[in-house]
Amino acid sequence: MKKVNRNFKVLVAIIIVLGLSLSVMAQPNYRGQMQHPYMRAQSGLNILDLSEEQNDQMKEIRLAHLKDVQPLKDEVKINRVNINVLLKNDDPDMKEIVNLVETNGKLLTQIQVKSIEQRINVRNLLTDDQKIIFDAHSEKMGKRRALAQHFRQRRMPERSRF
Image (cartoon, rainbow, N blue to C red; front, side, top):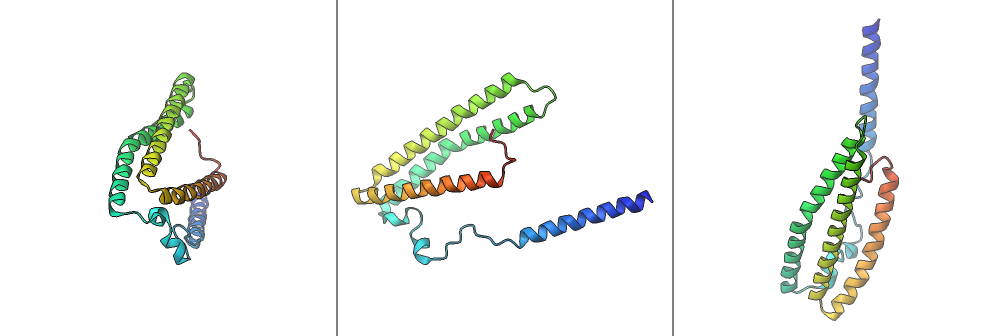
């Protein structure tokens, strides 16, 4: 009797997992799909009509920025994992948790400063007309980024902010 009951539970669990996976697969993929060809052509820095020299300099700035920022981002992720591990202990070490949170704050500040430096370096490469377009586009992208972050946080409330 117990074996039949156990088999029944396993069968129900498999059906639920398959049912959930089918519903997930049925969701449309909206990532990166811009329907209007004008929007597709005008995305990113393409709207600035950069010269070849400007493109090369932008690429160098972007790669240098990634090399600077990636180790910091990795360290932030490691600290977040360590915080979550400490929080799951029976007797969490509050001093260690606070230390990791403060370290992450300093790292995130460094990342933001480096991002601002990159933006300034990119802007310094542009002509006056390109700067106007760049500033207007950056403002719109900032609003979109904030809105996307808001909806991402609403969708996944269980995600830790550490």
